[in-house]
Image (cartoon, rainbow, N blue to C red; front, side, top):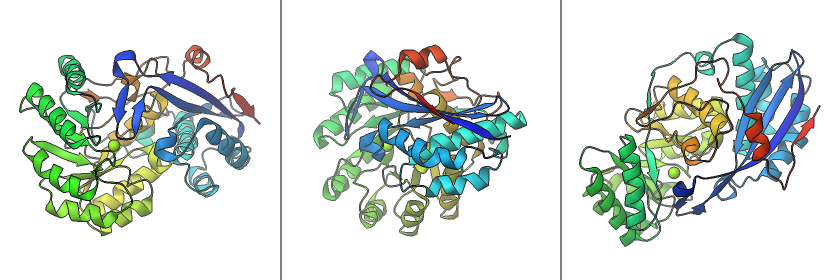
Amino acid sequence: MKITHVETLPVLVPLKKGLMTKTAHGEHVVSPYVIIKLKTDEGLVGIGEATLAARWSGETSQGCRAVVEGLMAPLLIGQNPLDFNRLRLPIERCCVQNPFTKAAVEMALWDLCGKVHGVPVYQLLGGKVRDEIPIKMVVGAFPVPKALELAKQFLDWGVKCLKVKVGTDPEADLQRVKAVRELAGPNIPIGVDVNCGWDLPTARNMLDRLAELDVFFVEQPIPQTDVNALAELRRMSRIPIMADESIFTLNDAWQLTRAGAVDILSVYPGKHGGIASTLEIAAVAKSAGICCSIGSNLELGVGTAAMLHVAAASKTIDSERYPADLIGPLYHEVDLLTKPLDLGPAAARVPEAPGLGVELDEDQLKEYADASTAARELG
Ligand SMILES: [Mg+2]
């Protein structure tokens, strides 16, 4: 079998009206993605999703397409997709960074491998360690009334864990977390995500005060640039510290764990350039005696499916202890799939069909096509 064509389909999908979100990085109202199709001479098609956010990884739809078409397609066309390990290295090395673009191509290869063997991707990873993956929903960094409205909507639906975005203004942050804690009661675990929004003195002060509100983890309290400062915070904190913006690469995992800087690594295939790299990072965490948790860049259907397979197959990605952010499709107008994923309210389930186990909705792909940059096929 050979890969014959590489197709890139840029789309723009708005968040649902009531669910547009806000973090210390800014407001999020519409999400750009590039869907990748790897076509073979035997008629099988592998699909992947690049979840793009310039403020997050520096990647854009135009840049993603330039990398896929200019650097990756020539490496892939004519190759057997079952030679996964042989294809992986050149894809990783064809450019620095661009993790979400690399992950899109990598997940399309996994999808093809699963379809060829007739098994879901989690089976290729050694099988499931859990049937249900607990999830949490995210309350944006809004003023108290709006934050409470969102939290109430999630709790009414049956959500069992919440994450509150903070990192904009310390006093407003505390008021928001306090209000959500009072609404949710003592039995709903609540974490916070600072998205790099505090400096070290603010974080020291805030960690003490958040401990009084029974917060069960604090994600990325300070910018990603200083591993030693993160380690200092961890030593004084009563609350476990999670790295998110700090952990993209395998080397980041090594630096963070060697410094004893965090208790949890937030991981997902897009951020690390694929499913295989995510599992390698989980192995570093395991060796350091810490765990991982599934984070998110608000993936759509295909990207979330890749996360589900990793989450189902890894014990170190401890979703029972730190529920996963398997939530992107719930926030968007459409998921680009013919059949929605089984997400929430308390837990998600991994698709059972071969490969990633999802099918693209071609009508939605057309309807949400990014008008500024049309679909193209090389081959
Ligand atoms: Mg985060």
